[in-house]
Length: 129
Image (cartoon, rainbow, N blue to C red):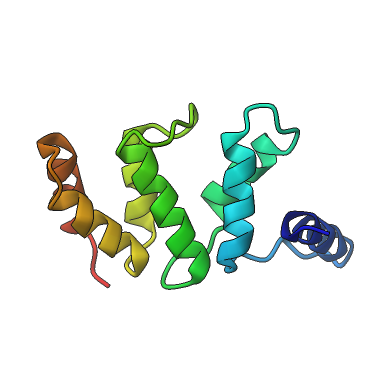
């Protein structure tokens, strides 16, 4: 059983108990979500995209690290996801409030692309953690 199917099973169990899905804190699960997101033919792509955007725990978790790295790939044009524009990727990084997101934003701010650097600096100015 993959981490993703185990997560879906957990969601169903929690639903029966009247609970919402737990936030994702496992980086390996986020890596599986990203694989489905990158695969336009995946039957799980839409749900994985929602879990990636809305259920991945911010902060310093391994999930936050995997999410931040993927958002960096999108911003640098190394990955393309129709539903996540460069602007939206920066917005998602801004909501992560520190941890791996700051490292990614720092790398982008010091990178060779001036336009990306300016956007990264704008987001960095809003980070308080």
